[in-house]
Image 1 (cartoon, rainbow, N blue to C red):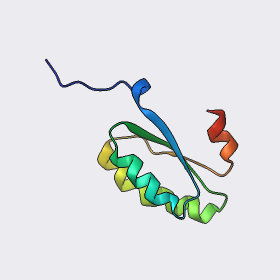
Image 2: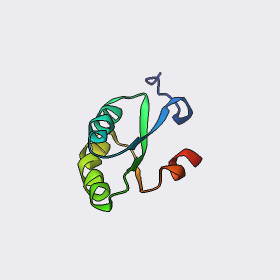
Image 3: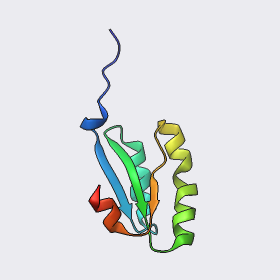
Image 4: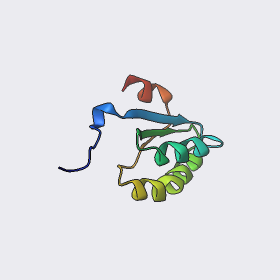
Length: 79
């Protein structure tokens, strides 16, 4: 019998708005086995690009998909 794994439907789907202090939240989400970082959001394109680079290592370590980078938080809320 294999180890129990949660289905994706049982995981918290999260997004982070604002990639100043929000990067600390993204790091915490990536460390949690019960959460999936789906979006990172910032109106500043430079912060958004930097945020993607910042979370890449944690995403790889978790074996997760990269979060979608968005500039309009309404896209995240629509999902």
